[in-house]
Image (cartoon, rainbow, N blue to C red; front, side, top):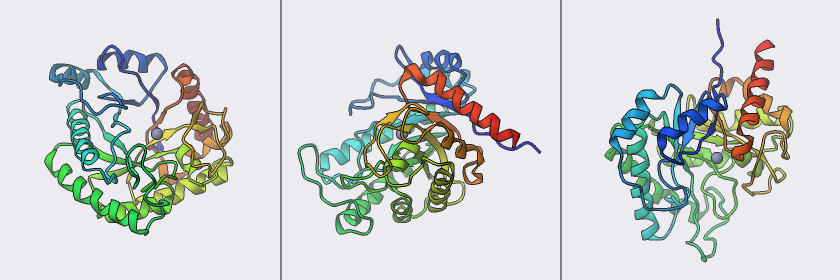
Length: 296
Ligand SMILES: [Zn+2]
């Protein structure tokens, strides 16, 4: 019996058009790919390109994931941010469907005021600001998913924590998914840098594996659809989200082997979100850890 192996790839630039991502992915040996379909730091979507999307879907043989813009926040108290978040996510889901994506990744969001505002809570699951923000997220997200019937699975990405984060560690992730009613259209995208920052120490293989099990348990069976594999510039519990290339951060190369030896995440696609110049080496490192684990 062959064991399901996690495909390994990278978040790939679409500079010059979506079609340009495929040769880039191929050049570094990617087996999975993540792209932006609109600027990650802007609200305004680009014009639709149905022909380009169809051509991409036809020629792409890899599992594809779309990362929605970072600005989206369904926990925001600003009606303007909320309306823009809905439009932005709807666009990502529609484009994701058009290019044949297996999932659309969205950051879990936070219960903070807009830029220049003060934090509305400490991000503790169960606190009043958290509850209000989550009720609002549920009210917006579920009807939005109804409005894009052929949408890829929405993958919630827990963040590094701090600043009123709605989901960061395993327990807040579980509480977040509970509020959303454990909807089958909603899954999870983990990020190893965020997990480490949120307080799960990934710097040993045992710690890494334990954290993967804790998140997988909180997410529920089959819910983890993708893992962003990044080392961290900051120590465990820092609440800081600064990615580092694999083996050059505070997690360290060897601990990443847990990704391939932990049954709870077996077969889940892995993409690095490190510096573009390091993608080829990072993909190769992960494949080599995978090969070693296959031999066991
Ligand atoms: Zn990420």
